[in-house]
Amino acid sequence: MRLKNLFIVVCLFAIAMAFLESAIVVYLRELYYPEGFDFPLRSVPVHIAVTEFFREVATLVMLAGIGYMAGKRPVTRFAWFLFSFAIWDIFYYVFLYVLIGWPQSLFTWDILFLVPFVWVGPVIAPVINSLMMIVLAVLIIRANRGVEILRIQRLEWLLLALGSVVVIAAFTEEYISFMNAQGAMGDLLCFRNSGRIIELTSQYCPQRFAWQVFIAGIAMHATAILRYFLRAKKSGLLCCCLK
Image (cartoon, rainbow, N blue to C red; front, side, top):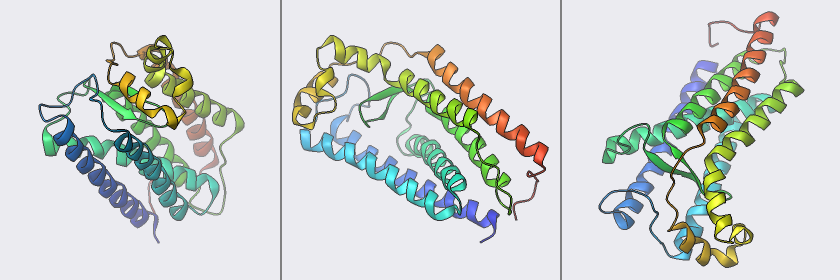
């Protein structure tokens, strides 16, 4: 399949997944937030919370699957996973806005993820992260479309991994601090105590986002992307066509 057609197919798959995800959220909000979504989170039955947790795990597996099928090498499979994840994440918010007029702005707070525990942040933060993922993914895919392979170097891997840890810390540090203050850190990864976690989470209301931490993580990602771009350009592996 031509690279251009592959981009179209993966985009369509990720956009369709985004609509499916947003549709589920519309149903959940209609059930639990009929007056409109806001923090603190409503308490839900344990089986609903556990189902949501594993639904998100299943989403990651599906995105990893499309990445594996689209790529021919480990580095391009990684890139296609990043690309599909980012497109899915961005269009999830697009469809929510079209369907229910939410979020009201890019700085509206959202619950971003539940794996392995709650991530929260303003909508603009995951959108920025997704745009960075798209840039990196497209660079990798274009640089490795031929016979030659441009691998990600150790320093670039380190910057990407460390940057990801820092970004995740920005999304989770306030929630973890809240749970730690409640003496519930030991319960976070124990499903047998799901009821207590849900009860405490329903009392949590985010107050501030760790922008400095987030920007530091994004800067690490940007540095890795810039290094990779310069190496690809020097090697003559980038071109304007998508054959």
